[in-house]
Length: 237
Image 1 (cartoon, rainbow, N blue to C red):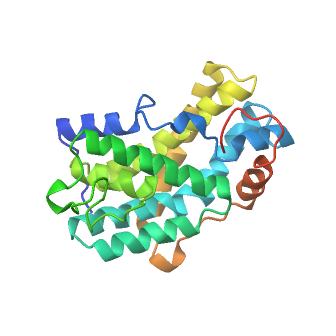
Image 2 (tube, rainbow, N blue to C red):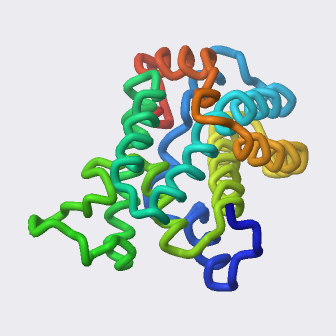
């Protein structure tokens, strides 16, 4: 597991990959958070910080973060079978139609973007237009494409995990600023509170064995399922 600091170009590549300006449409999804607002489970700065802390501890640290590390390793080893298995595993953890659609749609958007930037491994492309190499599943999800982009950019695993977690946190706070009476200063206080927890989540992700992986987020699953029929919505998940 690389622990050295990323090169300047790798660092800039990471900043590009986690930027809110990345045109993949992440701003349109709330991952059930909008429903949590509607249900009154999250209503202010304190309850939002607690919700995000729980998702980070019981979700990202046990699911996306350790799997990104495994995908990164599989890309290094050119192991397309392992990549496909972990991509399928991630898809199986999406407990609602909206969460599954979010992962697939963001993945498709990131795939198009990486293709336009010549960051897909073109030397292994299949002849048909819009087909991916055997190293990448044809319908790879967002997390898998993120891991591929990090690998292509030469971003060390730990920095890739921190970047993924940071992008998730910023997006969730952007959702809250739009849907709650939450100011940007309050959002920054939450970031300050959760920065250390994000580092801890990455540390925990490194230590887990394969049979210890799996999110435990029943509240998110319930909120997401209820969001599917919510009368008025700002977000797609």
